[in-house]
Amino acid sequence: MLRRMFGAAACSAAAYFAVAMGTAGAAFAEVGHPVDGQLGLQSPGSTGMEQIVGIYDVVNITIIAITIFVMLLMLYVMFRFSEKNNPTPSRTAHHTMLEVAWTIVPILILVGLAIPSFRLLYEQYSFPKPDITIKATGNAWFWEHEFLLDKQEGMKNVTVTSNVVSDEDLIKASIGAEAFAQKYGELTGVARNEALYADSAALWAANIAPRKLAVDQAIAVPVNKVVHMLVTSNDVIHSWTIPSFGVKMQAVPGRTSAFWFKPTKTGAFHGQCSVLCGKLHSAMPISVYVVEQDVYDKWMAVLQAKDKKGATEILKAAETARLQALKPVAQLSN
Image 1 (tube, rainbow, N blue to C red):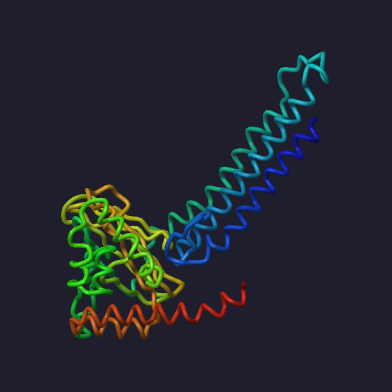
Image 2 (cartoon, rainbow, N blue to C red; image 1 turned 120 degrees about the vertical axis):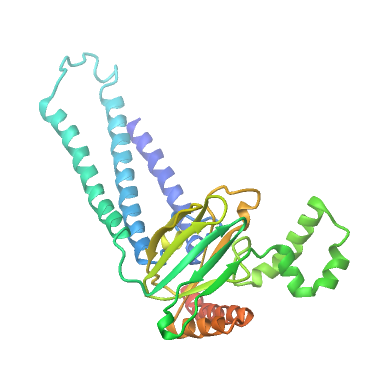
């Protein structure tokens, strides 16, 4: 009986891991945003997130090991000390070494988990010297990012306002406002939303930014540089969150909070407001493009000239080139 129970448990575990590994390719194919069938955390894009993923893996392995041990112990006890196999139960009430072990071992496990956790917490609040400082301000319902630049070098602060790109915006940009009005002008409510969703699917598939996470004006930071973020709000509580960077900070009116991150990979990284802030809470995405220093300098120069359209084209061109360079690698791996 015990052998059959172990066999069933092993088969279930094997089936689970087979499904998991079968979806892992799709789950981790992208960096910077969630994908369908994703398992675990998003791929790390910063030094802090790399440490978070490391602790996450250690904790999960510990939990799985404890769960398997307890399950096997329960199965053994159920079989070994059943009424059939052990008709005369022992009257032993205490076992000194056993009680010491099940007290000391959990303490050692918790201490082992606490040490890297405290180290990470300390590093998150130990701010290194910044290469870039950005002030993010939450509004109902969009984000403003002000780059606090060195005025001694003749640079002026620039502000980038990020609004969500909707299905309607994407279709209008493709066919024009007049054709859009002729095709969708008479539709209202659910029928209009369904039509826009269906007709924009192909456009989103060709777009470099994912649906519901794309913005009209993204921000950029150079790779391998320390970024200090100052976060506040003009109205209600918001939350500036980029999962791949391992950062999340509340934007509270009348208060400025700070955190830092150091991106280690180029690419487009997306997040969104993570606090229920009103009816358009879902329309507050955040897009950060991590680029090489020369691309960042070019982007900033164009922003200084107040050419927002040109700045957006620079980031899209850099991301398109990065994705094109990855295609041969993806084909070889397949």
